[in-house]
Image 1 (cartoon, rainbow, N blue to C red):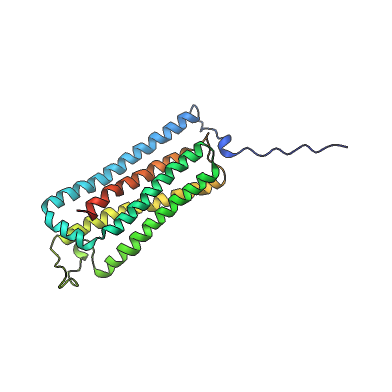
Image 2: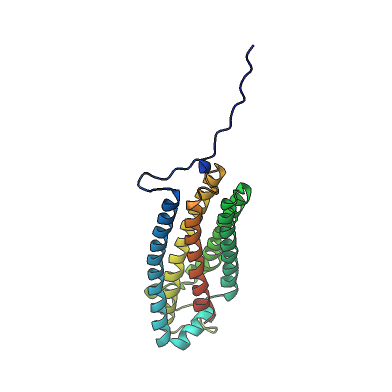
Length: 229
């Protein structure tokens, strides 16, 4: 009578991960991927730097008008709420990288999901509490700006559409980056559920984390420039 041999569990993906053929080893692949992300983030910095330069030039010419427009059109409490949400998400993204390094699969999944939820909250606040009401009131950029509806409480200046143009372009592009980040975080969470990340392989977690930190950092600059001027 033969005894059945115990079945061995299948090794996890991150435990047996092997680098692509054009790399010498896993470490080179990881460093190369991270360098590629840093180069990509450099182009992102150039993109937002152009906006910041445009903002600085226009604010120089319309200093008082920009201050009045910021106080009238933007609510600093909403901006502060979204700032807090993104700061929490940056912390949880960093914790997800650390969890993957320590092979704490549960913490990895939880931190990725919290980060994604924070991104969703940011977008809901932006769309529901800012963009929606502004569209209804005609507080739109450039020629789409509606001068009516302010009688008795605020008299719009000719530079208000300029300020709102900066606001809409900068925050909309930033919001699109947040949306991309949420999709990437959910993708990471899906892969984390399959145990794809661990001490021997967490390249995607690290690189998405770098992207998310940059997105958060851009908002740290946008918040005071737009809401606290």
